Amino acid sequence: MTAPTFKLTELMAIRCAKEINDGEVVFVGVGLPLVVAGFAMVSHAKNMVMFTEGGAIRATAAPGLAITVDDPCLFTNADASFGMLSTMAALQRGEVDVAFIGGAQIDKFGNINSTGAGDWTKKESFTYFAGSGGANDMATSGKRVLAIMPQDKKKFVEKVEYLTTPGFLGGPGEREKLGMIGGGPDCVVSTMGVYRFDDVTKEMYLAEYFPGQTVEKIKAACAWDLKVSPNVIETPSPTEEELAIIRGIDPTNFYLG
Amino acid sequence: MDLDKRMTLKDAVAKYIQDGDTVYYGGFQIMVPMALTHEIIRQKKRHLTTIESSTDVGGLDILVGAGCVTEIHSAWIMNWYVKAPYAIRRAFNKGHLKRYDISNFGATSALIAGFLGIPFIPVKGNIGTDMPKHNTTDIRFVDDPFTGEKTTVVRAWRADVAIIHAQKADRYGNVVSYGTRGVTDEFGAMGSKRGVIVTCEEIVEPEEVRSDPDRVIVPYYKTLAVVHCPYGAHPSACRGYYGLDIRFSQYQGKYERHEELLPEFLDEWVYGCEDHAAYIEKYKAKFGQEGLDRLKPVLGFTPKLAVDYGYHDPACWKGVPLYTDDRLKAYEEAIAAKKGGK
Image (cartoon, rainbow over all chains, first blue to last red; front, side, top):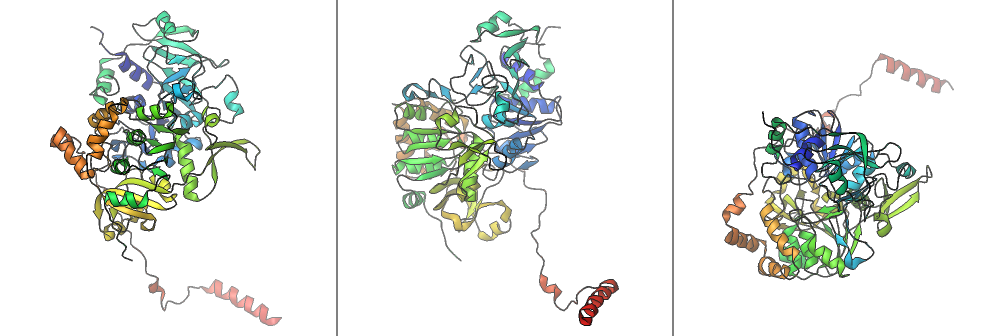
């Protein structure tokens, strides 16, 4: 039997979905998380509760591919829909297990930048992205943060240029000092591998590398001296069945292209 | 009461939006008030400040690109289908635009504080990041007066006027928006000082709206103008009417990207169209009726839960003696005897 061929974005999405446990309340951010959540809900996490910023609360996968977090399909046969107030308030009440976000740039403490590139105070050279959206709120108060983003050296940096969304900030104890109720980053899945955070130093380390990738290649696509778990493993390739599901969710490759 | 607030897009914007106003910019990634955006550009309104939580499809980007907006308070702005807010980026670089960043729930909470008529409100996010460093206009810290803990607070946002798009409204201005309750529109709209301009897909009879008042997000007294405007949120989606026009957003985004091209987009699609109906006609002429047909939603999801807003008439109590029993009577007689004995 020949191994199925797949794109790294497909493996990224499938691997990331496995970080969601059945029954968890997952706040799903815009972009790739919408595809991953859809996958989780029809495979191993059929009892997952899906929240979006638009205010949808769902026990079942949306009937179509949600392009936006208030996409009409998220509200078709939703379990509840109140607007942003309801789902965001649940974050503040501490009811969200997983804050699931994308981002433009991440650093070794899991801080995320989705505001822009450059020095904000030097207005003439700052390149604006979209801004926080709900990512800041999600990462502040969700019990744990799951992040998904394509990897290169400009995206995986020593220190984010603009700190939009809190990871472990400057290191251990800083979140607690500011009274954040969420536990901070737990896992990052990129197009190259899977990362976790050291319990003591709170620094991101490589836990798994994708098939076809090497630790050296991954370290080269990371702007700081990335630490590697002594138990680092190769992520298993996706199965035909998993690939069929993910391709069914995003048939036009809107997110996975 | 028979106040008919229906008017043209042109009259609504001319009458109710002034240069220098703070405008609540409705919608989110869908239900973006694009027809109103175009009309504000056509009428060359200037020095507007916008407040909203998040906004997509480049509506705010072209409003900034056309020179109408000089200050924005927001959590997230871009044209998601080209992955950037190009005109906003340029305006910020040139110093033409002040931008105040905040998180989505920070923004929503600021609008809720405006809705509640209170000066500020605590939130859990934003602390520890660069947003409060660069936006002390909206985000500050106070000691919780009860626990003494450092607490993030955001200033109440109250617009002069709110612009929103909804599925339905009646001629009085009762606004029906379903599926998300407008995400944050009920707060942004109700917190506005002068009132709300609404564009809607359909004008319905007040009797129809009153038959289901739970769906109203803005009651008539708060509404300034009702504009019947099919496809008023295009290229963003309007739930139950049309989906997101990704191809048009990408097309518009390419014009947003290039400073020298954007004026040509505005000339053709905004200044070159008398109103939104003309814009849709232009769309059909350029991209075909099939372009609009492709946006047709999958329908057939009308509520299966029967709801009856029936009421009870208290006239039924007329002539009905008070309920009592032997225990109550004995107790009451004992009290009366005690009082009488003194």
